[in-house]
Amino acid sequence: MKRAEMIYKGKLAQAGCLVCKRIHPHHEPASVELHHYRSGGWGKGDYTTLIPLCVAHHRGDTGVHGLGTKGFDAHYMDAHGFTQADLLADARQIANS
Image 1 (cartoon, helix red, strand yellow):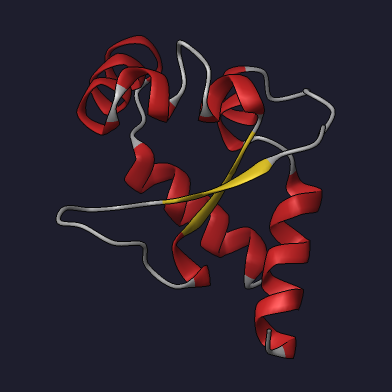
Image 2: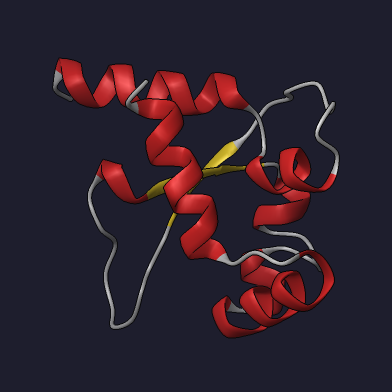
């Protein structure tokens, strides 16, 4: 792993779950899993497509793998006004600051 990738991932790991942050702005960061955003097609992108998510929002019933990509985006857009693309933009801003 290259140094730039380690730094990038480290910043994301410390940021906490970006869904929790959007829903509960004063939420204390907890441990996360780094989710690869996929905008279509198969395969994972590189490390710049990672989004930090807690277990519930990654693999849980209301998570991206529980609801599916389209279901996740529909659910969180309807309930809270954001999608995975918005979370990816947040992640990139955090990692590049």
